[in-house]
Image (cartoon, rainbow over all chains, first blue to last red; front, side, top):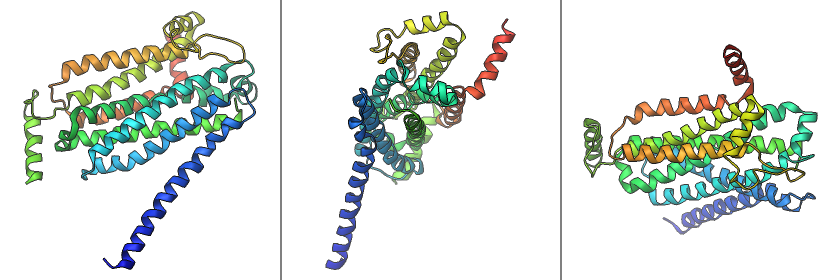
Length: 192
Length: 146
């Protein structure tokens, strides 16, 4: 490899990492700025938003690994175990903070009251759907983490098992994204 | 060579329902992924039960009183009977996982058959949380039940 090729390769690596970090920081601002909103529930809103966005980012990254698992491509299982464990923790935090913010959603003169008075379908159909399917990603990702730690590297010899792990990651991601978008729509309609 | 040995492991795993101790078996994986599905169905059934009457909603709610924020009123609100639905789903998920894991930890079960069942069950339970889909069915069931 010539010096020029090396520098160009290295530059691409630096740029891609910088882009990833910047994208994450900017995306987190979407919920991070909730901490400064003029409401008594800014802590709940910010925490739920940050944990949800982080969970979506981690799960989206994991879907790339999921396709490698489904195709049977060799991957680093040690790294996969760490990522799924992290994603499980973020999903748990998202569910717990979701419970916390849901209290205010249902509280006196809260978003639920406003939505029922002005756009009832958003509560009756969207929220009644979102509040339950948002609970799906945590147990699914917990199952994936358990499977990867339980079997260890021995799982690599069973293509059908690794494929199923990949499928479960994709299913978990789908529900996470559904819940995330529904939550954003409801927050846009009426903030806590 | 590695490919060949992998195929042999597949064959040996499929040859018997109870594999030897060195072969990874599918039982624990199926136990770990079946139990959340049962938890989701519990969540769905308890949700619709709580919609039938105030008394049933109270009964479901009672299972969740241990969760912070399950009771309360005013601007801070509470999560109400959602806490009971979560508690029952959590109980079914963890209990069934423990039971199936113990039963199947050395069992070879067909993963290829589990994939469509798992995906179908997930799709159906998701639809059952969508009121425009499930409410006409529930109304029919309630009216036929007297």
